[in-house]
Length: 111
Length: 113
Image 1 (tube, helix red, strand yellow):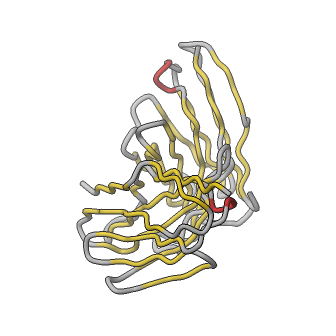
Image 2 (image 1 turned 180 degrees about the vertical axis):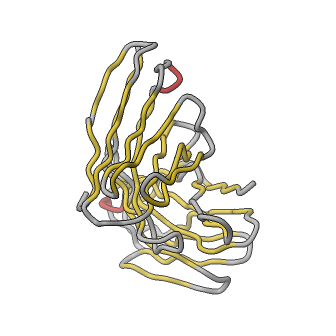
């Protein structure tokens, strides 16, 4: 059974205070690892896909990295508008490859 | 959300009544998914479709059925609603199983009283 564990559950940062969110996973063959952002009352919004260990992707203040057992979402000099819940999901390399999601990390960035 | 709409956005229903939620897409994507999101559980897959009339069960399919008679529409039916089905329901679409990510709808907040 595929499993995704995200930590911490919640994180409060001051504006400009860099940090990282963690996503640990177990999957029987990884096709892809996905990061999403979700704002209150809205559906998740796609951020990144990582396919192999060592891969990195960047978008504005966000950088996602991948190892064989976990992924990190690094947030550099965050702004209040980065406040959201960040979701991690894995896609197995079999069948129709539906996504299994973690419970998310709720990030709050204070000015 | 561009290309995918869910209806209704909010619904309150009574225990024991059937309820149908609709997901409509204009992207002509092959794959469609229904998830529910609950505090402490995250997003959990209910059912998914890999083509017209082709559907399969997800992790939490008990008490739910789906139908897909057209590419653009994927219906989720709660056969006899229970309070445990109070949740936010999200529909998602993808172009292929090996996609770059799902596109999610805005969700339907369902309350069963």
